Amino acid sequence: MTTDVSGLTQLGAHVEAPKSPEEAVMERVPSPHQGSAYVVRFTAPEFTSLCPMTGQPDFAHIVIDYIPGEWLVESKSLKLFLTSFRNHGAFHEDCSVYIGKRLVELLAPQWLRIGAYWYPRGGIPIDVFWQTGEPPQGIWLPDQGVPTYRGRG
Image (cartoon, rainbow, N blue to C red; front, side):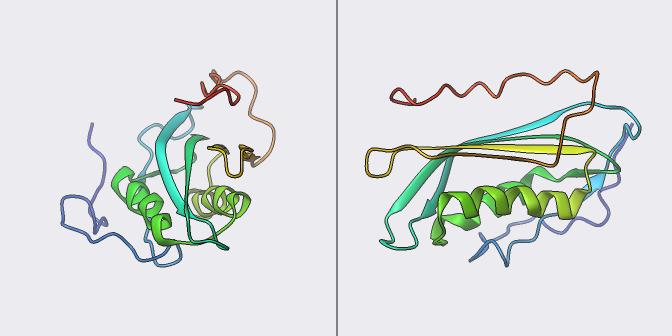
């Protein structure tokens, strides 16, 4: 079985990191198992963005789960998209929900959720959760595996 990668522009090429999330190009490929309900998980344990007020770095452990419809996100383009936040100032809530909404816009998945587990700022961790609705019945949806804050690692 092969996947059609003919429209991809980033995979297999040297690509500079995008300057901002708005400029980042995420790409997609056809799902080879359309009509099957299965979960795809991406974990980014070293996500970085900037505080919009101080310019100081903020760090998060991001977990994205989705059930594909017709499309899968191409992982290199997702990695470049997530990297584009390193020089982007936005509050935790904005970064987290924006990532989810961009993926939904690109993929039109059957279902998607994002868990963004932010490391403490001012001694308080902020966790942000967003999903498109109730997960479909009958799927295996494992816990995201990130414990509540107790000195994350």
